[in-house]
Length: 140
Image 1 (cartoon, rainbow, N blue to C red):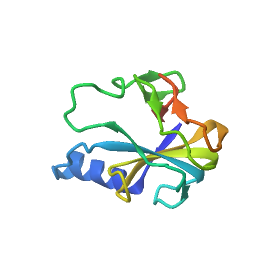
Image 2 (image 1 turned 30 degrees about the vertical axis):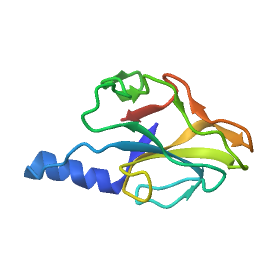
Image 3 (image 1 turned 90 degrees about the horizontal axis):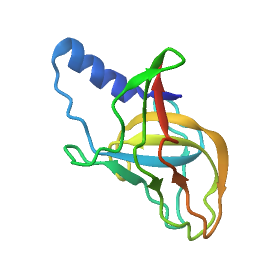
């Protein structure tokens, strides 16, 4: 399950109810060792060759996500159509517990965030990957 950030909630409400345009941004997956919240924060991984992973380019020809479908728990789901593989860690990244999706490679605005099903320790030489279908974004 994922949560929408305060930033994205505002943008979507303004677009739907006030006609204030919002262009779908390029998106980047970030990894966290402490949970972000709807307003941001958390502890994003740093160092050891870590970088956010770009997962779609606005207007790109190869979508990263399937179209939203009804989810068994009464909401809607999108998940990744391709493996999302980060660079190999050149130092320990720690215990990854959460992810965030941003609109920029660095800083930027948090769009969505959520907890991993199971935390994963990433050490020097490890590679972190979301296999096809493993990164579920569910809104209820």
